[in-house]
Image (cartoon, rainbow, N blue to C red; front, top):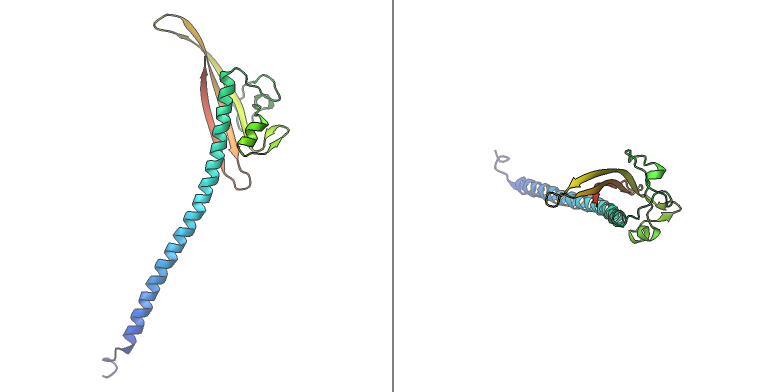
Length: 164
C-alpha cells in the first residue's frame, strides 16, 4: 500500500517528458533552418543562371532589331527547330564581353555553358486597317540555354521577337 502513495518518481517522469518535447522542438527548428538554407542556395544559383539567360536574350534582341545577328563565326543564321542539338549554323555568336559581363567564362566558340539558338523565322504580311498599306513583319524564334553543370541548375528561355 505504501508504494501506491509514493509520488517521488512522478517529478522525474514529468521532467523527462518535457525534456523530450523540448528536444523535438529544437530538432525540428534546426531541420527547418538547415533545409531553408539549402533551398535558398539552390534558388540563388538558379536565379544566377536565369539572369545570365535574360542577359543573352536582351543581347540577341538588340542584334535582331539592328539586323546584325550572326551565327557560327559571323555567318548568316539558319533556322533549326531542335534546340537540344542546335546545329552549328544556328548557334548565335555571343560576344566575349557579354559573356564576361554575365559572369561566364569564354572559349573559342563563345560562352561556356551559355548558348543561344536561332530557331526559325516566319515572315507575314500585315495590312494596316487605316492606311491599307502592307507591312512585312518577321517573327523570329530564339532559344537561350544557361546551365551550371557542376550543380545542375539550368535556365531555358524561349522567345519570339517581332521585327519590322
